[in-house]
Every structure is written in C-alpha cells, then in structure tokens.
Amino acid sequence: MQALDHDVLRHALAWLAQTRPWLCTIVRTLGSSPRPVGSVVVITDDGRQVGSVSGGCVEDDLVERLRAGVFRGELPELLEYGVSAEENERLGLPCGGRLTLLLQRLDVVDSTWLQQALRALEQRHCIQRQVDLRTGATSTVAVDHFDPLEIDDHHLRQCFGPRMRMLLVGAGQLAHNLAELGLAMDFEVIVTDPRQHFLDQWEGPSVALVQGMPDDVIRAHASDRHSVIITLTHDPRIDDMALMEALGTDAWYVGALGSQRTTERRLARLRQLELSEEQIARLHAPVGLDIGSKTPIEIAVAIMAELTQLRRKRAPE
Image (cartoon, rainbow, N blue to C red; front, side, top):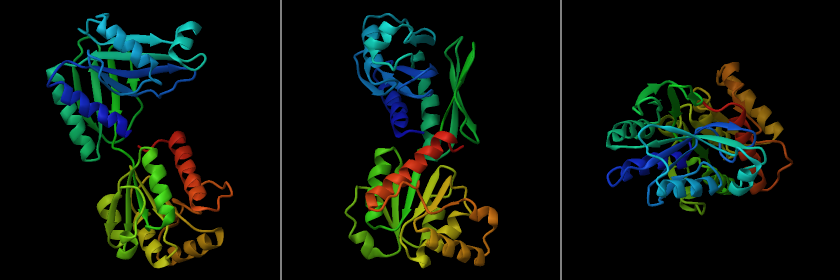
C-alpha cells in the first residue's frame, strides 16, 4: 500500500467528525493513466483533499462539480474521464487515456470500516474493502494476501496492504543514498547496524536507526512479505548473519551488496551454513540492476530500479 493511500483513509476518518467527505477510487483505466487502478482521493465539499487520481486536473474538476451540487451522493456513482480528445487535453490526461472513477459519499457509519482498515494496516495485515454498489453499504474482511481491485455491476472489492518496509543493514554512505531514494519512493526505511559508532555518525535522512545484531532486528522488524532487506556492510560477520535470518523469512526481497567474486564467496559460505538451495536462490546478489554503477548514488539508483522493476512485474502478495 502507498503511504499516500494510508493518509487518505486517515483523513477520511478524521473529516467524518466534521462533515461528509467524498471518497473517489480509480476502478478502471484504458490506455495511459497517470495513476493506477485502486488509487484514491478523499475530498470535502469545501475543497480540502488528500490523495490523487490524476495529475490534479481531475481532482479540480471534481471539486468544482461537488461545490455545484452535481452529485447527490445517495449511492456510489461511476464517472468517466477522458471520453474525448478535448477532455484529455483539458484535464491533462495522456493521449487516449480514460479513467473510470467510483465516487462514494461517506457517512458516520463508514467510520467503522475505516477504523478496521487502519487498525489492520497498523498491524501490517491485508484487508479488503467491500462496497455494495446497490446500497452503498461498506464492510471489510481480512484477507491473506493482496489482490487486484475487482468491480462488477453490484460490488467493489479493493485490498489495502501495509506500506513496504525497507531494512538496510549497515549505516554507511550507500545507506544514506538508499534511504533518501527509498523515502522518496514511498518505502518505510529502517537502518540497522550492530556498530553503534556508525549509527552515531549517521548523516542521512530522518529514519528509524536500530542498534542490534541483524538477525534479531530482522525478526523484530522485517520478517513479513511486505519487507525488503538489503545488506551493505561488506563485513561477512554482519552480512552473513543477516542473510541467514532473512532468507528464512517471508521477506519479499533480500539483496546483498558486493561484486560477482564477493557474491560467489558469500554463496559458498551460505551453503556451508546449511541454507537450502531454495533459500539461497531467493538472494538478489550482486544487488541492483547492472547499469555499470560505481558511486554510492549510482548503486542506490540501480537497487531502486531493480525493486521498481520487480514490483511492477509481480507485486508482493
């Protein structure tokens, strides 16, 4: 789940104490789209909004129409944007792009499902929002994994999952750059190092800094399927301990910094430590896409590029 979508749910719940906000969800796209299916925005009648379903122009049009009282809000309503070339140009949508949005006016009764969803996300669980399009009634159900949004003539089913967490083992310069990029790309970032003096010298962005042995930190903070674990220390005593633990968890991605020669030596050590071939095959090493990177920021870009590529190909369940 994107942090922005989490903010949408939190603001929707808070605004329900003052007014009846509108929750708008992208339920279909055709052609190019500035935001993916499932993206949400919450808007109040006076124009406050959090979230995004476009570059901003669709939201502006929605606010104008809400203020004009175009929508009654008694039942969820489907809206289409981008049905003509003129509208695409006016709204700034990509050429040929079309969005179908579900507009739902929230009421005090919706605070129940919003609270349930936020509670599940805080506990790093997946939850599904189910909307009866004939009545507007909304409920939630716990689910084991994230499924794509589904909509038919009668129901909307939309999953919300926890924010992806990135655990960086080693608090050096590369971790600074990775943390900056990770935060910019909506990861929750944690940096760990058993060497307190490395944490004391941290000059990177404001993230959680955890001192401790890496296996303990992984068990406590990054063992679920919404976790990314990357070792960066160049110290086998630290990195190998982290990888032994990480490769036995449900973590979505486990990567290790190092050259091809370093990687070959690391794989030999992991086999001696009795990790299975199936576990070892999960390791992304050398970490990152091969773009010829040399400097810390270039390596960080290569790593984030690989994560982006993998997330788009197969989102974590």
